[in-house]
Length: 83
Image 1 (cartoon, rainbow, N blue to C red):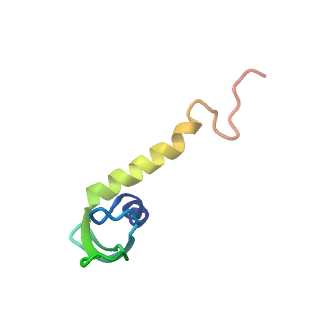
Image 2 (image 1 turned 60 degrees about the horizontal axis):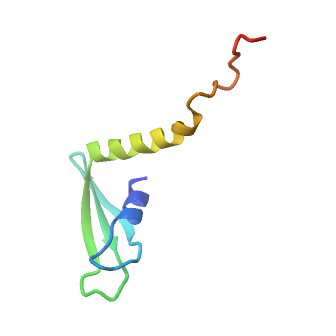
């Protein structure tokens, strides 16, 4: 999920291409990713560190967004008592 988020949001300078993100290592609650632009830039690789709290925030936002359309609907198998 974090890799996909980085590929959607990170950009190298003025490059408009989506980079490819590859997780390098996890160390002490930090996930380090290498991003590759693949463009003509002299420096087309860079790293991005994502903390455990940032990962938790991304997951929370994803879950909230997924569940938002379901608010107000009864859970499957739940009766409304109007029968």
